[in-house]
Image (cartoon, one colour):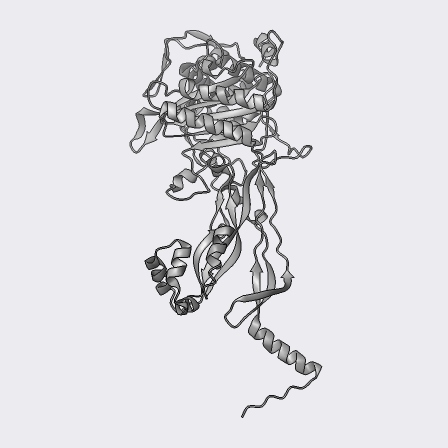
Length: 547
């Protein structure tokens, strides 16, 4: 016979209470809310929604004898459920379904099948879907950032789970909560520099351009000309972070920051900065490009036709290879290399984005003449679209290179930029870029009604296993708008456009025009009144002055 003696003392009560708690009181985790990601205007880009994950104790479930009922409730083939139960035989935990909508999860739990439980969690949802997916990134099934800004700012966004106590019965089911030991601490919100309105506009225009040109891929990036904030950044191909079925890993890549390209003629304005700084050239210095071609070593570099004696400004306007080559050979490689380096070529923009690339600015001990010339017109070096946009921001920002930011910058908290050229030279380059979009320039299709704009086309051969591919191109355009008081800098890249419209002027420039027109409207930039004086007109009027 077993006898139990209970002493009515404080010590006795404490002993029995502790023994009971050891058998019935359990501690559970309280899930924490992940911080919100918004655009610069507060529009949500990533939110966490409450869901319920359904799990089971395989031992209890096997003893219940109710597998067919559970399979029907889960909308799962009975054979699949039996196979899963067999794999987890002898274990005490397995997931049956992750992240179910609460209403659907309650239907399953309402059957009260022994060994089947629900666990509250949060699931990430991306309201803009594919439009902002490659910038925002995504999380894994456990809510940890694994791509994009979700990864870069994972520690900032993720919350700290709390703890609570509850009482369970003999079957292991929770009976009631006792109390919260540690409250969950939500993650902190993140406000991006991106304007979702402009992001949607650029996404639409890039998809349209890819469809029209049959390009393999493409990128558009737009910066605030003065703050360096990324206002929009889109890529093709795309993926939807809300649905991972069938997507290809390469589609998640943010090409604007991870893909490096030879920029071609889009860096000729940088070469002309070196020419103006040398004191040997002004915008109106004449250069003889006859007979329309020039030999450097074994390579013959041609122009579309013989332009004869033309000014430095017209060299850019016509994108003359001969003119740029003669200038580069005259001033030497080092001044050109120094300008490229000052404008951020070969250094990462410093956004902290995962996979951000620095590009390549070669620094050889020995340079062949053709290598020096190639550098001057954009071959033999690589940049990302974001790097190229940042370099052009120096022209738009009075000669100051702004830092690049993917986060919104509060008013009054603008970080200092770095002066990389005089304001006078920046003005002269803007004037020349504006003439590129004029009646006689290579970028007439980049013009925007009501605004003066400026920019530079680029058409480069793509590189294959055996070197440059003759019939495969990359079309680029880098531009600023408005030219007389720049607000935005935009770079367009189309990889592998097909048909006759494969060049920077025919394929990429029209995309810039549509994006700039929409962006200036969204930013409430008033068009220039007809006949009004402008900074560009003033610079053009004094273009014969000293450099």
